[in-house]
Image (tube, rainbow, N blue to C red; front, side, top):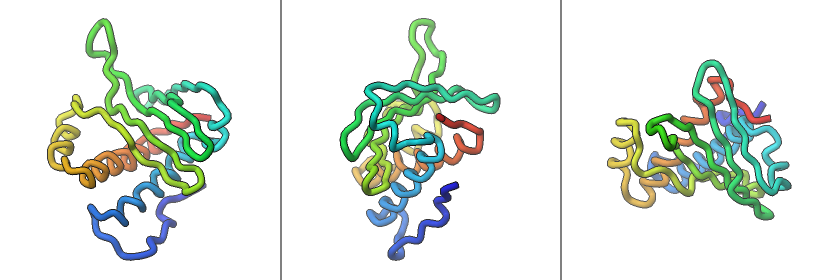
Length: 154
């Protein structure tokens, strides 16, 4: 099993720094690799949609957005029934996986979150580096939670 606690930073970094952000990307790659077994094999798929179900949590949806030679772009989300017509995706994260660099980065997220704490976090970090920290810390913590709840795409 891959463990992100085995990552040794090349230098000391502080939260909010670019170096720290790269460490978060590396940690998220390892966790995403655990969640999506055979992550590198997904690049051979033309389209992919999967649902991970566990009795301890909501259904988790994974959709393949695009595959290039060295990158794969995925969407991860829960779908909540809010309106009769259309479910609401939240959090709705688009994640780009850099296979050669072994990094995973949130490239897009839902800006108008339904959950109060997610809205507060979005207001506190609105500049570019802050926005990247906010989205990628959220992905990293969410991946921890998903793995703890027993989610997996095999």
